[in-house]
Amino acid sequence: MQIIKTVEELRPIIQEWRSQGLSVGLVPTMGYLHAGHKSLIVKAVSENDRVVVSDFVNPTQFGANEDLSTYPRDLERDAAVCQEAGASLVFHPEPEEMYAPDSCTFVDMDSLTKGLCGKSRPTHFRGVCTVVCKLFHIVTPDRAYFGQKDAQQLAVIRRMVRDLNFGISIVGCPIVREADGLAMSSRNAYLGEEERKAALILHSSLALGEKMLEEGERDARKVREAILGRLNTEPLARVDYVELVDAESLEPVEKAEKPILAAIAVYIGQTRLIDNFTFAGGQQG
Ligand code: AMP
Image (cartoon, rainbow, N blue to C red; front, top):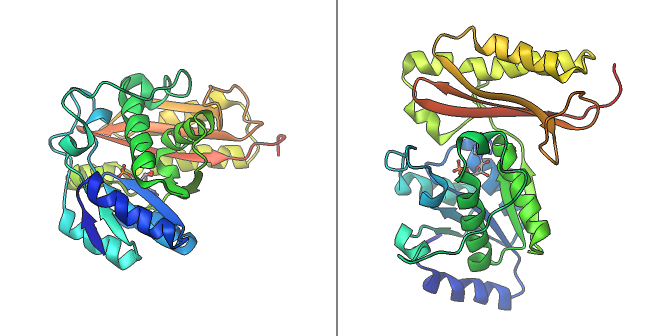
């Protein structure tokens, strides 16, 4: 498995694969890989002849007061995870390789990016769309793999690919959790011992909401309030948002009758964590 740092080195490798008629899968990541990332790579390996994992902490998706400088990094360990999962290549560019000093072109979206995480992170999805668009142009994959963990990101990328005719299949992959239910995240590394315990409140609050829906509750406000109420029982938790939205448009819903996404963002101490579940909807059970 190769580690490639420049676009110039990467392009001929991809061209060579293409000339052999091989299919290419892409797994975009910010590194510090865990079993959630690995599940995406394993899935990509099972569906493509060659798999590129990008490992790049993308500065344009961080806001001014966010954790860009402290974001955890470990290329050596990431390379071992990629190799074990069967990836062909890790693309690990420096920020200067991806963004010229006078770079001024961005990809942005009018809807889907204003609510949920977009409310407190107003420039985040512009950064995500721009870097993913660049990676799509550089790697020209047949398929690209994204986790349902970042449900809004997945919906945004699907829309971007449709709107801009990328002709790339976007494959959504289920959330991988720790044994106790906490959704795996590179940011879990920030949590102290007490915070790690407190972080379980995300999953248990969502589980409560999901149970209400499964038992027939369709009033989104009631489900939202139950999730919020449970989150507020944890002294170390500070809620950013709890939303029940249409799974595709990401617009808030009153009734959970069509497929919905229940998504939350919660600060545990200084660490902002997200989690979600989807519910298929349907008539009251
Ligand atoms: P990140 O490195 O956080 O940008 O994540 C890279 C990709 O891995 C994104 O598509 C994420 O949605 C996905 N991912 C992160 N955590 C998980 C998880 N716990 N389960 C499944 N996919 C995940």
